[in-house]
Length: 173
Image 1: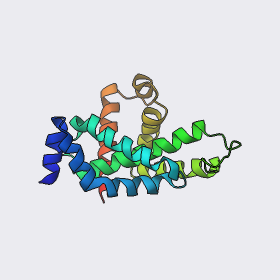
Image 2: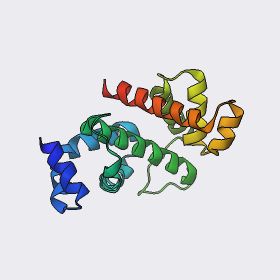
Image 3: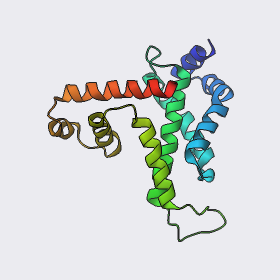
């Protein structure tokens, strides 16, 4: 019942909705972010804030028939944390170490990201994994992906939709 109220308030852009969301889910979100960021502890607070902002900005995409609100939030938190890892890898210079930064082995961090993605994609067949990587990670053109796989663009979007459903179901367990 409280989730319905949170969703309603956020959709109406009422501050009470985000306050209720923070009260109910801040611990869960922080835990997911902490787990997925690993050694990047100095990014936790910023990432958690971005998760709340993403929920606020994307509430219209929540579909209660497809997933629970809690699971939807967990997926957002996990993806945000993974994106922070990627962002850190692309901007970090490990030769510049001072008291404000932590030394992070880029290879270890890269391996953690790869393992997280493999965990997310493990329920997909090889062709769908390839499609997901091209579409979501490499952000390739959907027309090109469809052409390479000898499928129509609508088939591509259907495969992506079914794959997202599989991933949501597996993360809900």
